[in-house]
Amino acid sequence: MITLMKKFFESEEGAVTVDFVVLTAAMVVLGLLIAGALSRGATDLAGDIEANLTATTIPAGR
Image: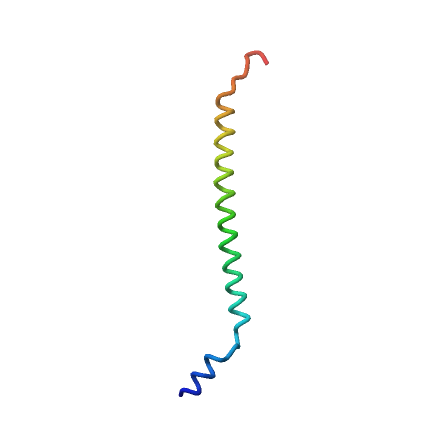
């Protein structure tokens, strides 16, 4: 039983898969963080544009 457990812990089978899963998870988290930052920036920009357009007056007759 001890030999079987020792073989299991020393086995490197599947290590590449684990590496790819960890890297993929890191890329997903990074993408979500970037998307969140861009979304907040776009919302702020849209609010500024709305405020400027609301405050703008158009002279009559043009």
